[in-house]
Image (cartoon, rainbow, N blue to C red):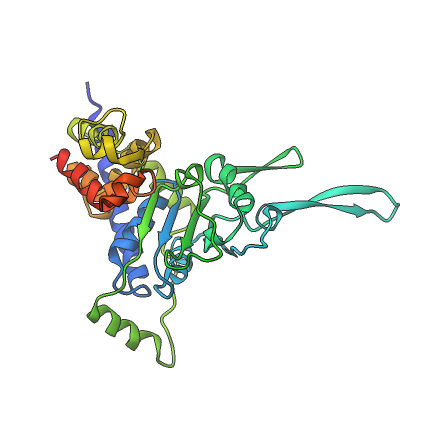
Length: 331
């Protein structure tokens, strides 16, 4: 028999969370103008306890967005500019040999910038594959291993990485294993005319608005716990399963996927959707997710977890078009 007191407590927590998130969105919206969907997806990733990959042309406020989110959520935020000469130790830290006053030598671990709550990996695809892979363990397991010693990362720990798609020279493609660690791929578009007018007026005066903290670490952890407690209805769950399985060439009944997709999404895509639809419902002021949430998050979840084959590209197929076809499949 359902526990009515438990349900009432959960509803009360959700209603309080909705108020908090409205305040968070408002604080970010005063700094980041005209990118509501991008802001919501970045917040969604953090509410789910995951990581986000921001993809867009230079100058679209990706860096400013990450800094603002860190400030508003009360997180310890650090930034690493990824360059071809960046080494894993520059991110993770390293052991250095020290000598005491008595002449005894010992190793001391100096933590790198990854020991923070929100790491901005700026232009992540400019670093070498060796350096990119240094983040794999941190992103998945929330700890790093240096010289055989395991060092736990702070809680919460999130990575918001950026990459510029138009700058191909001097970049290294992110491997599939690392792309899969990102909960969402968040495409950052150019602003509309009205939004761009507001940006010009707001950022070229004597003073600019500054971000202010709305949450703290304890408040964010409580929100992340609440997201995992929210129920997902049977219809929404079936939509998630249909979407992810239809995107795989081995289990689809769509000829475009079977013949055109080189590799499809794994179970992490379904996990991302299960968490993401709950967080999206809260961000929109609802107490339960629906199939529309699955459709809205299909692109951010699937875009970096599947790839078209050469023949499909030659025929003019695109991933966004294929994902739109998959969304229609879930009705």
